Length: 121
Length: 106
Image: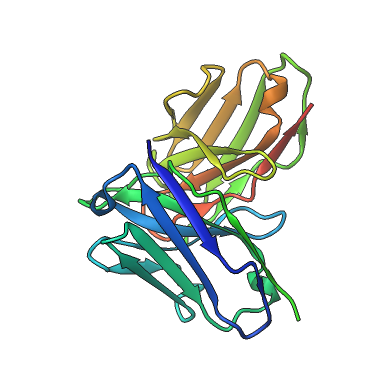
């Protein structure tokens, strides 16, 4: 059974860097793109970006200048960093399984439990 | 970028009622449309993909239809456990975009 378990700091001050990690269990890491999605209070989810097991990435243009995604295939982990956070970055952040690594498209069928990240001075 | 617009929120209905939620894409997306259900404190749960294919384990009272720009999620007989917010999402190309959500209440 596929499980995603995520962790990271939940309280940040403006201008700090958000850092989250997600571990993948019960699935081949190399079989899919792995994604980060966030959801601000009362809003719909927002796709942040995705990473392939090769390390190639694709980011939402709205966040591209501030986001970096990395992966550690030896641990079946992937992570994201978002720099220069502001109150507008306050949200629940989720990791999720994305589309197949071999190509094609797919919805997000497995999600992590979510991490509430609050940006406040 | 393609925008996804859902029917107004909240939608109130009685147990046993038929509930219909609509989603409109600003450009055609063929049938690359998914529906999710989200309850407070939980991540979204995939209900339907390819506009009308039910995810494994999802009750048959849920159904989806549509293609191109206009899509519909239908709950044929609303149950108390269906109280949630429902999101549509297009996945034909990046950026993968969600609607703003439709809350269903009893």
